Image 1: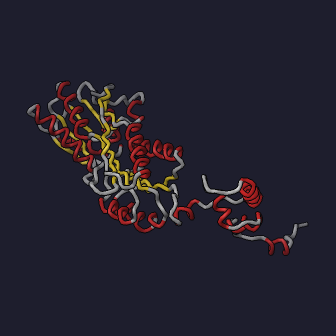
Image 2: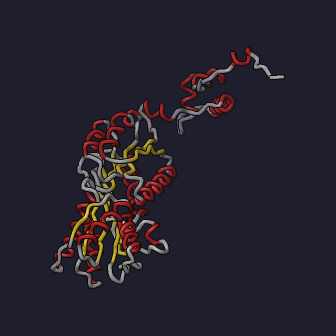
Image 3: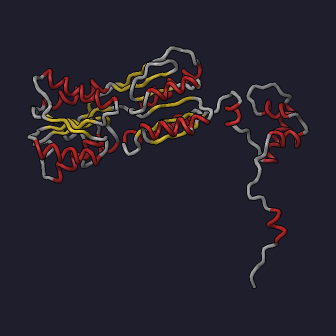
Length: 343
């Protein structure tokens, strides 16, 4: 026999239960609304017995203060928006993973915005700015300075990682891209390579220009010029395609790649074609992502240390929140060559 629902029970069900408020706690504890607020404010003046009564009432009702409401009323929300860049790029993914962990340890709660350019900008201007952000971290090298200008109008400090924006309340973390790229090019020259091609990153990324400039500078100092330059998108797929195009049209004995993902894609193409790496062709990358050290890849690359970059970001964020009017700073991330098996 089928079981019938009791119609009286369904009438008593609340499909969207109301959140317990501070006023509910005040009524339960027999105190004022302001006393409840003081009970949950560290350092606020309140009689110990009254505080215990309020906390017991809050526990009974299942009440917790609304941190977002505190941010809206002028306090700290502990919300930090992060433009994470292109999450298809392993380097960006590794940076964001470490950054989120460090922020969580400080009691900060990230709002992640994937992508770059207009899509990410529209998400910020249209939705994310509606939240009371403590700060914005710009991880995407392609983000427009306009974002920092909008943050300044809202008194939201900005930590920019990957490019330098000169503006009030904007601190910057930047890798020495030119020097690191030049060191990889000099390594190839010292290896006896003279027909060197470059796979660069997207036009919209500042690091792309800097890494190409470093390569060109080192080659020029040796009386050389790149055989060819191909456009990539910092992905494995684009590195594979760029290598196929380059080797279909040019005699090349070394590939200088603007990041590890493209270098790994290029390695895949060369090995698919039976090319001896590094016997016939040398390949270098940039970033030193975890995959670069995998057996079967063992990529020679330029280390762009993630731990150092994240530490600089967090340090600048804490200093900016402690002193909103301090002068803007630039923290530089130093690079170094990591020699493995592909040069």
